Length: 313
Image (cartoon, rainbow, N blue to C red):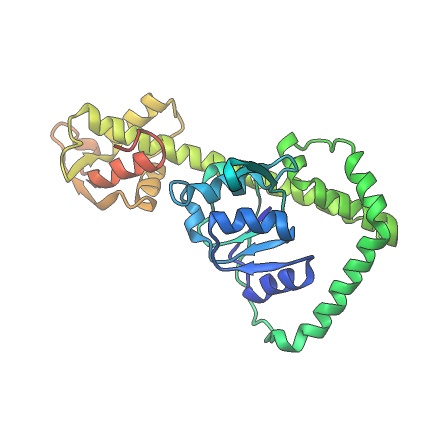
C-alpha cells in the first residue's frame, strides 16, 4: 500500500491502466470497498483522499484499509437468513492526497512524498498513449504468466532482510519478491538492491519526521500545561513572556537544549502565536525589552486535543 503525495494525475492513470484489474476511484464507500476487493482482486487507486487524514471520519473505511496490507486481513459480513461470510481484503492500494493519513494507517503504508518538477513536463494525452500502455500491460502479463511459479516460491521462502523491521519487511515483501524475480529473469541485477535501499531511505525519513513531530508535540504540551498552571485556559488570549514559557517547557519536558527560537517557530507554525512584541519588565534592565507572545488560548487547547495531549471533550 502506498501514499503518493501529491502525484501527477497521468501517472495515477498509468498505474491503473497497466495493472491487473486496475481501478481508479475518486471516492468509495466501505460497503463497496468490502464487496469489490474479494470479487475483482484489483489494484485500487483512490484519488483525492483528503478525508483519510482524519481517523475520526469514515471509521469503517479506515478499519478496512488497515487490514488490507497483509494476507491475513479479512472482514466478516452478514449474509442471507442470518448467515455470515468472511471476505479476504488483501489488496494493493494506492492512496493519493495532499494531507497524509492518520498515524495508525500511516504505519501500514509505504509513504512517498513527491515534489513539483522544476522544468515543464511534456504534455500527456491518455488517448494518445493507450496503445503504448496496453503493450506494457501485455508484457507485464506475459512476465507474470512465465514467472508465476518462481514468484510464488520466492515469496513463500524469502529470507529476512537485514536492518529492516518486521512491519516494514511485511509491507515491502511483494515489491522485494518482484524485484528479485525480475533480476533473475532478465539479468538486470541490481533492482532488488535498489528497492532495499529505497525501503531503508524511506524508513529513515519517517523516523526523522516522527522525531520532529514528537518534539513539536512536547512544546505545545508544555505551553498548554503552563497556561493551565496559571489558570489562563479560560481566556481567549493571553500575553506571555517568551523566556518564561521556554524555561517552563524545558523543565517540564526535560528539553534542556530547547531555545526561544524553536518555541517561536513551532508555535507560529501551529498558528498559536497571534503576534510577537517586546515589553519592558521591571528588574530586568540589562536584557530589556523582553520578547513576549500574544497567545491564542483556544488554538492551544485545540492543538492539544488534536495531538492527543488531552482527550477531546
